[in-house]
Length: 93
Image 1: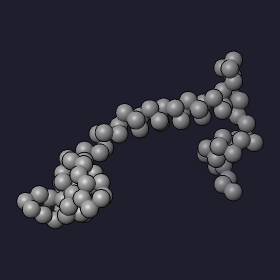
Image 2: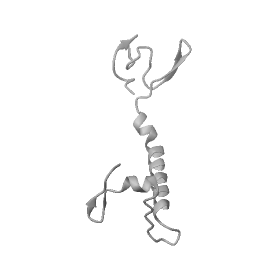
Image 3: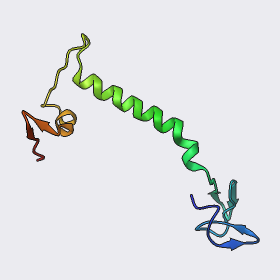
Image 4: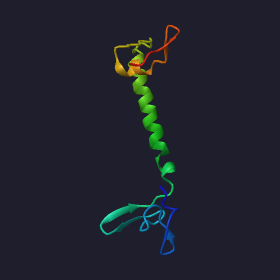
């Protein structure tokens, strides 16, 4: 992730590995060195999709098919998300 920064080797900045080349995937000594400098922008769509799926899966735990709220505190995931209950701060065990 720091491919465009760091030490300079043969006129290029290689990040934490001097053999790395910014914005290229190169193989040196049998090792693939990934030098992408825009990793955050490359994963934004996938991260958004994964987050949306996680939210949908969570909602499926607490909402019935008829649309009614069904808070099952016996489910570990549901219970772990509670911040308060009956006006009191939820205890973490």
